[in-house]
Length: 286
Image (cartoon, rainbow, N blue to C red; front, side, top):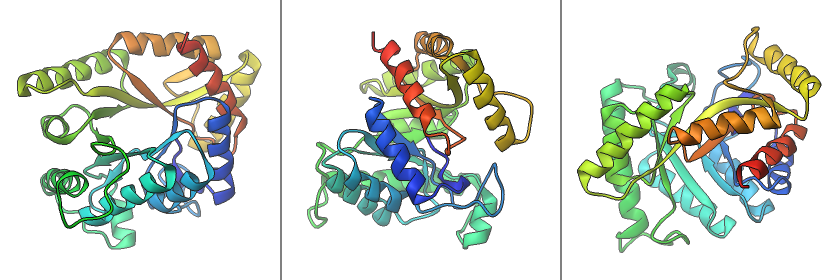
């Protein structure tokens, strides 16, 4: 999971994507923001869907998607078409993460209407319905996605009633950010109970959280120093340690109900850490 708004160049995107394939990881997801959140100016963003289309043409295996695209940036038809395009370029490897949006400053900078939280959640409901329609039943919308019945839809949130209801109606996966173990367990139960009450199959429950991992203690110390230089503090991300330590912590999250983890790699210049994440994935697969 790469924070694209923090000044990631095209050359860095390509290096990260190729490293992700080489490491045997399942996918590369990216944020969809237009203004920096952590590094500040002059960091900025290349457009999420343009980058995913370009990476789709240069990769062969990994899944590609947003975590998450705000409904305030694009009309539903544009977002649906962007995702379909990446699905075709990639040979059926796209996933659409979608959310209501929250970062007011980027809306002001780029002239997007921000509205109220309620209006944004209403738009989330509307866009999910329209995207699903265009991907599955609209007779006058072509081409359809390659994936059948459609690409996976991931709804992001903190297990509040509106986002959970939207995911249960239209989604395949519910993603929550930076949860503690107890929060992950509680949110997973909320989503599972809502799906059961609606009489539908369970949604995949996933999380996005920060990570620094190293081959040994010295490697972790160096990477944590680089991470602190980026965030400007003395803390550490929720997952921080050697391959064995991060693997153990992820197994704890799996026991709490987390089925997939998007690990935020905030120091995107450090392409070598992707290979270490591959070692974590290999241990989890055993």
